[in-house]
Length: 162
Image 1: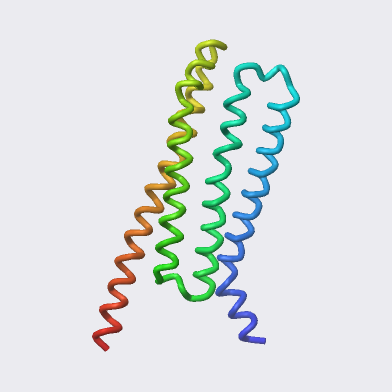
Image 2: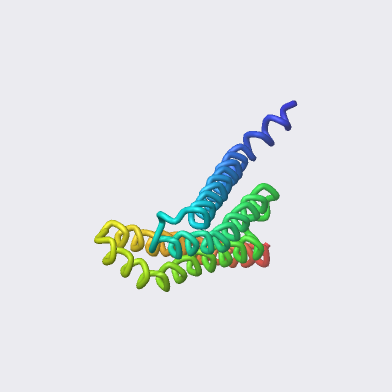
């Protein structure tokens, strides 16, 4: 009984984060389905149709990044947090975030065009946020990757010393 409680206490935070990632993925999937449905069936979206479809295309690297985050949490549960597997998962998360940001940067001229055409400056601001948010995630993943790599090297040095 005691070991079951200690396992739950040890895995509780990662289980919570896995549930959060699952619900984020579920919400993103629902949003993409809604955006595709609106962009295909509605004629009222006008110039926004390519933007809506582009947002759905960027969900592919987003879901890949969520999957890598789930794998990283699985490594933490298996006490393999300080391994090359974790470093590779962080590298893939960073790559996914950079890919999303690059896709939105490539779409910014069209977002600017639509914002000027509809006289909606808020669209341009939203486009800038969509570019900046994945960059923040990529920088954070890069820092964690570097720290984890340093911790692995220190661990290897200590293992060789003993």
